[in-house]
Length: 177
Image (cartoon, rainbow, N blue to C red; front, side, top):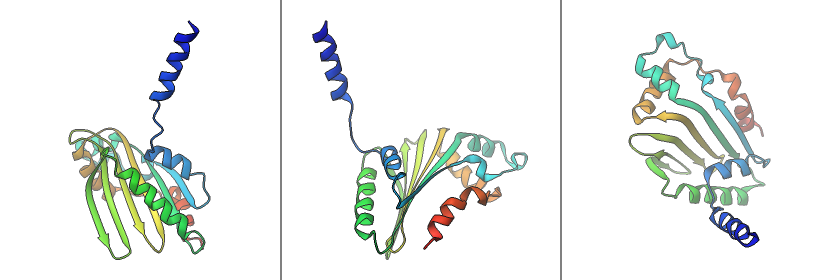
C-alpha cells in the first residue's frame, strides 16, 4: 500500500508543470518594488445601464475585472527592465495567446492578444512597452466573453464616466519620479 501511495505521489508531482504563465508572472512581479499591480473591477466604468442597448448590457455583464501590471523604468533598473520585457515576451509567445493587433514605432510597441477562440474569449491581453518609460501588461478577464462583446465594450467605454479615483494608484506610480 505504501508503494502505491508513493507512486501516486510521484505521478502527481511529475504532472504538475512549473511552466511560466502570465498569472504566475503577475503574482511574482506584483511583489517587487519596481512594479505596480492592481485589479480594477468593472464598476470603474460608472455606466448608466439604462442608456445601454441590450447588446451593450450583455457585453458589460461578461466583463469581470482588469488586472494591471506596470514596470517603471529608471536609470537604476535598465538591466532588470530588459530582463523583465524578455520574460513577458517569452510568456506571450506561447500558443495560448493569439495575436490580434501589433503596433510598432520607434522606441515603443504594443500588442493585443486573446486567450480563447473565435467563439469565446477567456481573456484579452494588452502589452505596451516604451523603452524610455517602462511597460504595462493588462489582462481583461470575464465570463462567456464573445468577440462581439469586445467590440460592444469599446462603445460602452465611450458612454462611461470612468471613476478616476480607482486609477489613482497607477497614475501616481507612473508619474512619481
